[in-house]
Amino acid sequence: MDDRKTLLLTEHVPRRFPRQEIPGDVGTALWRDYGSEVSVDFPSPKTDDHWELTAQGWVGYVPLTPEFGLSLQPKVPLDNLFRMLEYAYRLRSFRFLEDLVGCRSLEEFYERLANVLARRVLDRARKGLYRAYLVEAEDLPYVRGRLDVRQLMQKPWSPKLHCHYEEHTPDVDENQILAWTLERVARSQMCSSRVQPTVRRAYHSLRGLASTTPFGPQDCVGRSYTRLNDDYHPMHALCRFFLEHSGPTQEMGDRTVVPFLVHMPRLFELFVAEWLKAHLPESLTLSVQEKVAIGQPEHLQFKIDLVVSDAATGRPICVLDTKYRAQESPEAGDITQIMAYADMKDCTHAVLVYPQPLVQPLDGWPGKSRIRVQSMVFSLDGDLEAAGRLFLDGLLGRLQQSSG
Image 1 (cartoon, rainbow, N blue to C red):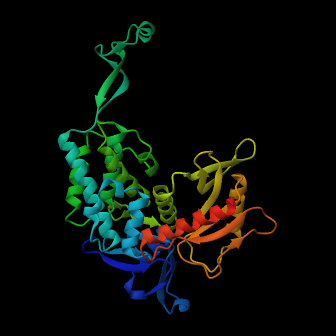
Image 2: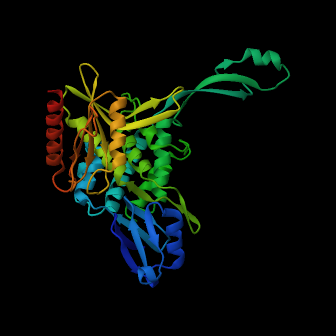
Image 3: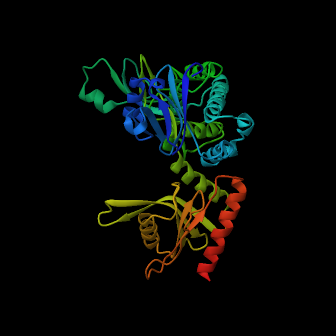
């Protein structure tokens, strides 16, 4: 990454490049492998013989070839993007902030977090990796653990003895998640020559001890920790961050690389959810990505972004759906969708949450519906904490009006 030429794009802002600035094979690879993340218009009379590239709601870094990379920049101020990521992945609670102060780019933010993860893995490896007892069954030339007498009677001629035993091993999920994540970080080509050796050293400290079994970001949350592995909790939080934003592996000459891509609509959804969890009054609870099934059997399922309920009774009060798209007014399909969600949860208040004010905001009861649908803003442009308080005060005030 140190010597690679980088093309800069800002999300949803078209940018043109002279035909000769981007080799044809590079443009074709971008269109073929990342067409959903970046709109690619080839040089033509329509584009004045230029390449026209437009980032489609994704930010991050894509290594296209050993010579070319693509940096997708957010519309959101970088400081706010970092704070959104800290909230969304609960990094704030693990006191990583001293390592993240002064980041000047999303790529640097990634690299610093990679350095934090690698250093913590190396520290844990020096102390000794977490181990657990796993039940094993194996044919052995000697007795270990419990002998399977039934199989011995069925095959008395076999020279091997089938035994069941427990093995105290570091090859468990806790370490496998770390190994898989570090391998993908090492392949991302996102780390400079200053940090890459640390990442590789951390990965090699796990090799031979923990399998590099594929894991997803969902495997890093909801895990149980004890005093023996409590320090794995922040490491798994970092793993979730890296795995959530690792795009599909791509071939680059004789190497495979992993791009770093953040889907801004998804990040906005996660950020709003985590911010509300941290700031809602105790009288209310928040459910995230709640599943609602329709029909018998329950073959059709919907996921509601956010459901606010009364903590005492558990009764749903309001459903919220985040919409990152910039637009003048709510789309009809979004209104219909949020009303359906409210009806499913038997509540009368539905809110569409946007990152910036609409030209034509919404507040009313569509048709003769009993459901009040409103648009609200959680601004990402200024102070996020102040914007969050303004959003929450407005939400609580409107819910109080509805209940009154």
